[in-house]
Picture 1 (tube, helix red, strand yellow):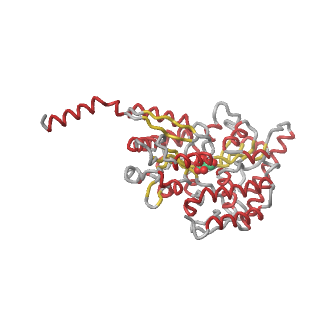
Picture 2 (cartoon, rainbow, N blue to C red):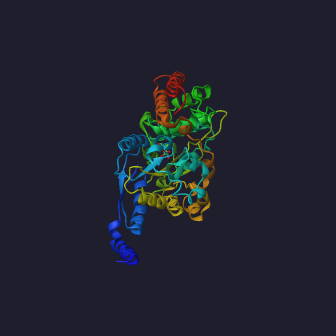
Picture 3 (cartoon, helix red, strand yellow):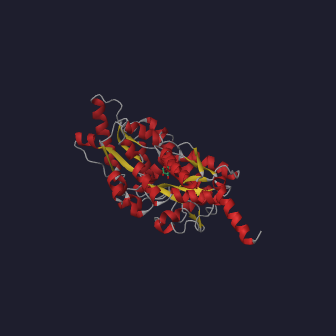
Length: 420
Ligand code: GLC
């Protein structure tokens, strides 16, 4: 056979073999609300287009539980999972286990919000690519505030007062289940977000400063946590100490809370057919602390390709597909997931269908990151010590001052010579 014929034969064989080259990929993802449904819809489209198939491995809703499981799989070099949906805070801790996406995504990178790409870059390696970003809102019952002639609160003190007034009046009128305020008080990463917002909005810093200094034990942070402690059993149910996002949304969506702190995904769900609050609520940025300003914790999710995947090329293609402008737009339209591509904030379809997205552009721009970059591989320990100190304070086990002093010692022991 001549070389030419040989090449032709190889080309023909690979054409004929088409589907035999199709691979089966696995993507692992946690979810709240309709995340998995949305993802499945997009994967169905990807399957049609690529000939590959993709299985979803579904995780519990808590990002803390997901992180624990992923760390086990990755440290065991598990090759069953090709793509991981990763939280914005994980990049420094999991960097060694993921493929560098900077070359493969080089044409897509300039379309993204630079600080988000930065947050996923560790020592020059692009560890994960953004799917959507996240920044919370204060949801409030417009109908109830109107009924009692009250305005959406600009400060936590105003929120405390408004929540108490409306809760008490509604209860007196027979609405016994009514609560003033629900949020995420369970001991997990979500509480780190909520409490960072309380602290930062009082001017009490970010737990650990961007330069690595431990700053959490300060009078403004103490004041912020004491204020939050005062909510338990007065405007917030005791049960809030075990609430994550979905538990708060459950109370809110059955019509039993005046205020809720939650991420934008709760907006379209609140407007859903089965929601008791459809048409009755609105959102504002979170309130400010005493002498401070509103602070929203920066959240968000990304996609990373496992170094142990046997199908890295196809996995990267899948990441491209799921992070394209089209995919981000669908996610914004369907679930109010905030885009990481700036132009989508003024996309007319999104503005019309999910007004919270357009309204949230500035909140995203000013959002406060958790200290995962400065504390590097120790972020999860730092966060765990912080959420534990906060949850204990809320539960009345020790004062804010005592718990933050203890936390300060724990963090200093963790840091020793420097964060690594
Ligand atoms: C949201 C955020 C994520 C955060 C989590 C905490 O999913 O996007 O960044 O860690 O909430 O519960």
